[in-house]
Image (cartoon, rainbow, N blue to C red):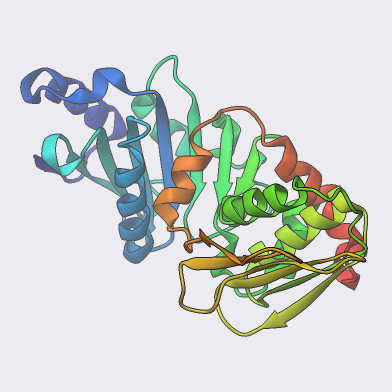
Length: 310
């Protein structure tokens, strides 16, 4: 069921959603959090809602999406989705026109589920300090999406300098499978030190630098980044005296090769992660991601990139 409410208030939207719980038989009784999506345009709302609706199958929640629209007069229009249109969630899309969303804390208050965590997700933007924004100050977790911003080094520097426990970025979740496979390779005998590392990845993707920072921090060896045009990681080489350990994923493939000296090449699943799968991972825990914070603040400065060393 989809219900449109024009020229309304967030309090009226909240009351209507509570009424629908009884009349539609909503699954909302099992909701575990409130996910607030902030987007700059209708495309961002669409992409964010698609990923969040999929993620709600793993984490039933109330989804509140906010889209500010330029207009002369302040007005709040809402769209409520429950039942089949919302999956294992209930959804409110708020279009705030003419400054109607200037006080987001007041707008959101009637729509926040009581006694559940709040997660804020900026689909297209990275505020300078997420924890002090109106939405971020309410949230236990704050998720950004830096991969769409064009200058990953600049934005990673901002995210490092303003980091507050509870912050994270989808680019970090995008590297989880790479980190898992690399850790598994290092756990195998022989226990031989890594002398240096080469990371091959997209120059415009923050995941390239986050993975390199993670390796530099935990291995305490020089890490070289071989940057190329594209949107994905392609290879990590761990250089050892007896030969290199390599994890190679060709462009366009979802399968990677684990290459180890003296052993047959092993093929492993290593798909490019969707926003839905990355969001599912980020919603698993409401505690601060300590590993992300350490890489951001202590791993990136170890890379031979002047901007990270300032």
